[in-house]
Every structure is written in C-alpha cells, then in structure tokens.
Length: 387
Image 1 (spheres, helix red, strand yellow):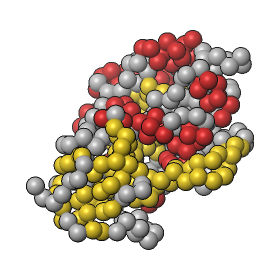
Image 2 (image 1 turned 180 degrees about the vertical axis):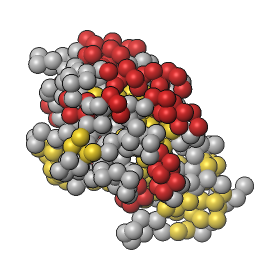
Image 3 (image 1 turned 120 degrees about the vertical axis):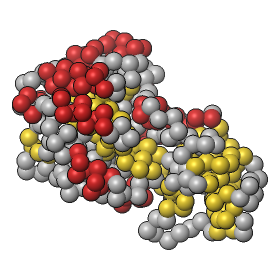
Image 4 (image 1 turned 90 degrees about the horizontal axis):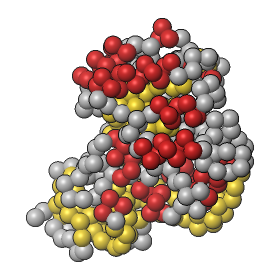
C-alpha cells in the first residue's frame, strides 16, 4: 500500500487506543491509513523522532467568527500556531447570522470548524472592550424556533446548542435562557453547552438542570460560582452532575479559570473532562493565549501528560459525539499534532491575577490536517526522508 504521508519515529500518545510509545502514523486520502512500527511506502515521509505525536488537538471552546462578531479571531492563524486541527466555535453565531458564519468563515477555512449554535438570535453580538451587552439579558432575543430549524438543517457542522447565563450574560434572568435552550436541544436531539459566570443563577442551579452529555463550560471558574466550597470540597451538586454524565469543560477565556479552584478540584480527584481555551480577541494575548498554553497549566497543576492530551483529543471528541475525531485509529480523520514539552522556568497566570512558575511548557511544532502536512509559518524543522 502506498500512503500519502508517514510520520516516522515519534513518541505517539493516543489515549483513544491507550497507546504511549514510539511508532509510525500514516495518512491516505485524508484519513489515518496506518499505525504501527516500521511503516513503509509513502509519497512523503517526515522524521518526527524526538517529538510527540498526538491526535489532532480539539479546542472545544473558541470564538472564530472573524469579522462577523467583534470577539472573533482568525481560525486558520490560531489553529496552525497552536496545534489545533478542530476549532469548535461556541455560540458566536445564532440563527440570525449563522448563514454568514458558514459561508464566509467555515467554508473558507482550512482548519476544521464545528459550532454550537446560540439560542440567542444574533449570538454573542455585544462582547468587546467598550461594549459589554449580555445577549441573554433580553428574553426577546431568544429565538428557539429558528434555532431549532437552523440546527436541524446544518447537522454537518452544528454539534449542539449554546446558551450563556450569569450576571454578565443574562442579567437578572436567572435560568430562563437555559430553560429555552434546553427545549431547543431536546427538540433537535443535540447536547447543550452552558456558560456560567457570576450569579444569578448559582452554579448548583445550573448543573442540576443539565442532562447527560450536556457540557458545562467555565467549570473551574473562580469565586463567585466556583464548583468547590470554601473548605476545599467539591459541591455535592457537582459530583451528582458528573455521575449523571454532565461534561465539565475548562473554557479558560478572559475570566473563567482559577488556580485556586483547580487546586481544590484536583486535590479531590476531580479532573476536567475537557480542556479548552475559550480563545477570543480579548484573551488571545493573555491570560488564555491558546490551547497548548491552557494544557500546560494543567501539566503544571499535576495532571499527567497523557491525561492532558486525552482532555484535548478523545474526551473532546466524545463530547462532540464524533468518535472519528481525536484518534489515530486507522480510519479516523487524518489529523495529528506534533508537540514538544520544553523544560525550564515558565510564568503562568490565571484570570484572577495569580501567577505560578512551571518547569514545563507544551509547544506545538507542526500539524497534519486532513492527511497533509500543514506547514507552520515558521521554518519547517522536520526533514523529509525517502519513501
């Protein structure tokens, strides 16, 4: 068999196969076509010995409606630099502006973009440096009928329904926007992703309403509305939600990740299901930066490299209900990320201003997207070898 591309000699970490060891990965026609030792026969072979190869990283929480919303960033530029092959936009667009997002951004992007569709008519339309208007504050902006219709007609790209609740996003509306979004999610048979910020509503109210397979993003946020108590224990409603099958996603962003909360959660054995950056215009230059920086913070906090990779690959794929993502199994999507873990002293900051010094940092060194080498803008360091 002749493959299109082989990555040869890397340390392959693929939690979907419980694999961590040196082997080769091959790609043909945009899919994984080989996995094992000493693969041969390819039009292009890249020597990645000394590097880590993982399934293509999935960032489950991003905002990439560039030009359509003020918080949007360029997906291709972000993904290529940070090792992300699938960027999941979480509610930048609602049913009123979805067609523009699909036509002008998603269909023109090289990187894979999936989306949670916002139940609010225009999505997150008022999020900027000087204007902060929560789209869920006015219930007249909720558009469940059109949201259900658009989601149903765009199942190739829309993976679920998004809603934002909390003082900043929904004012004094409490759980009312979440009620509407849950009706839409039930109608179309899709999971829901719920943002939470300051109360009202409370963290406990929100997780009690979520169904198995729904995602709570900003799950490790600081007080108020943290998932842990002042005594450092995990709130019982949070434990019950996990047992029920609710998915806990980081969604770092500008205001939603705390070292203090993370220390408490990890001390109780409560790791996040998914690690995501919530990257947008207001946090791409800090404190979130990108997906690999967010992953590095969990390495700093004591999670193993394999668990960090799992939370950015196979676990995210399961949340998307797309098992062909986030895996290097033969037949899966032909996406891979090449990483290094650099040793040294690195400064990390959370959203409260707390800083920690870490001795390791995960760096993205290259990307295979849709079965082909997706060249980074910086100098290509992986030599081609004869096929």
